[in-house]
Amino acid sequence: MHPSSYTTVVYYEDTDAGGVVYHSKYLNFCERARSELFFAKGQTPMQEGYHFVVKELNARYFAPARLGDRLHVSSSLIERKKASLRMLQEIFCGERKLFGMELTLACLHSDKPARIPDFFDEVLGV
Image (cartoon, rainbow, N blue to C red):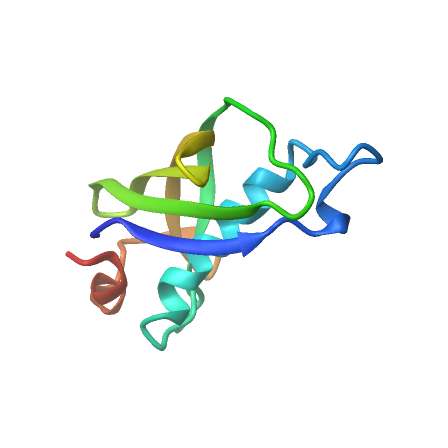
């Protein structure tokens, strides 16, 4: 997968009373960016009973995002295995890095571990 970018704006619902983004919302921004990878190719993240779930993640917060900030979420594939993916996702506001996480996604079919089907390769860029 070539690095992809998703842009969003911080809304009031994403923040606390001081206008600072809640820590869990960074995961939501990254989830949306992963979904957008599929939507941009005319696909959905759930096809023919196949989908991905987060198996593991390691996140690091560098600086807070605030109400009204325009955020850019970068997503790139680190490794593709038969039934899982490792990705790096980072969130920036301008040139400033706010958040980064490495995560492992497991492929499931009918809620059981499964080999990643070939039709996802276009989205993954492999």
